[in-house]
Length: 161
Image 1: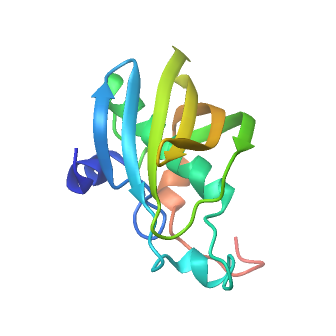
Image 2: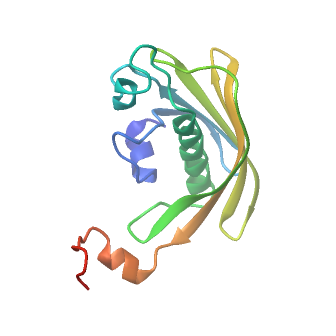
Image 3: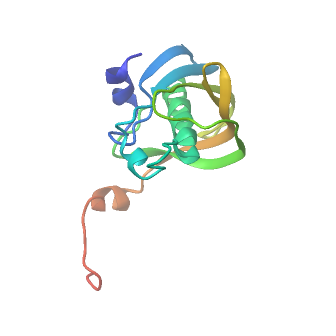
């Protein structure tokens, strides 16, 4: 699956879309995807300028995006303006090695269980076959309340109603 197909499934866009390609996908079971880490990513201007390191939260987010692709394909759903796929929990997150520019993250997620729109995943990110991070992820597919969807994007000044 290339980036065009990924962008049809995920609502994320630059600079937060963190899956570049899907290598393997077994609906209802597992996914393997890639994230190419580039020095051109805005986060590296500040984390850390003298020794660029990809923040752990972005590695976990990349894993969650891969898990979302697996869920959307498995359950024939897409994120749209009326729904979202939220993080519901992150358990047992461990970071084993730093990830930096030039690295290629292999994102692997396995669907452990799904019930009532909540998926549990066992996920890990690897660089050159070494585990960089691993975690158990809970993600929940939810409808956005009509009032919130209708008002999304509107801005109000403090004190206005």
